[in-house]
Image (tube, rainbow, N blue to C red; front, top):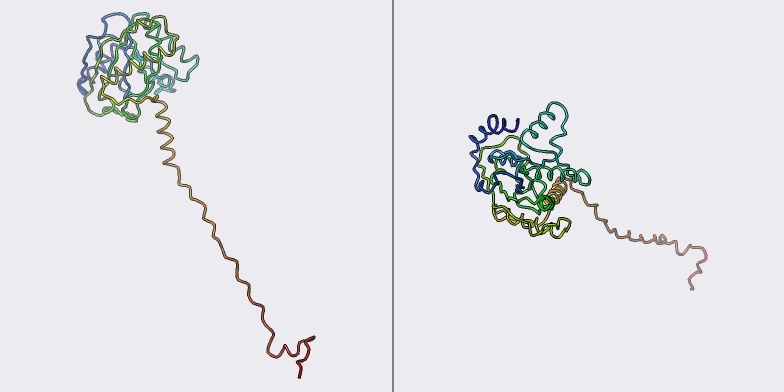
Amino acid sequence: MFYWFLKGILLGPLLRAVFRPTVTGEENVPVEGGAILASNHLSFSDSIFLPLMLRRRVTFLAKSDYFTGRGIKGRLKAGFFKGVGQLPLDRTGGGSSNAALETGLRLLRSGQLLGIYPEGTRSPDGRLYRGKTGVARMALETKVPVLPVVMIGTDKVQPIGRIVPSLGRVRIVVGEPLDFSRYEGMEDDRYVLRSITDEIMYELMRLSGQEYVDVYAATMKERLAAARRHRSAPPVRPPAPAVDREPAAALPSPGPAAGAADDAPGTPPAPE
């Protein structure tokens, strides 16, 4: 109920008036039945604009941090994300990730639209990164079509780190459904899962025009963070070079005083 209130009354009309988002290819979205919306991920607001522009309800798997805040602010944030159709996704791996996968499967089998970001996280620089194979596994296990979805302009409206969006135009492109029925029964073959995922990412690259990088976005973020830490570290002063000192020249011993040689004991007298 809150989802439709936000979309139709509270949030939707405001965003439509300010950002004038457009959608191309909505006819590719099935009128009923489950389907996966596999989207590139440029901005936090991707999960706001896509559900806003489609007639059917879209449920996204969002990182669990959005739902675990404390205090009034944390509860309001969790309520907002639930209201806009997002469910917590634990990205730490293991049993938590399997539980999130099962949640997605349950939604698809019940005939709902599931939004997912194959990259796993937002692009750190606007490029398209390697996809994770969870989307392929869900497609094979549920036998639903996969719709490639491209978000354009959201990284300009709300780049990473910006809380309040700036004015700009947002475009959404929904591609034709991808059918992977030829791989039926092969959901446990990791090579098949990688092939399907790569095909999805190729369609996203083709529709968006983004440069593709065959590295996980999370890995690239770690590299960029390490580079920033390296640049911000105080410079280490190299040790002072050792100075080669020449040994002090030996001072000549003073000779005998004048006349002392003649008086020196043990010196024979000069012959006459």
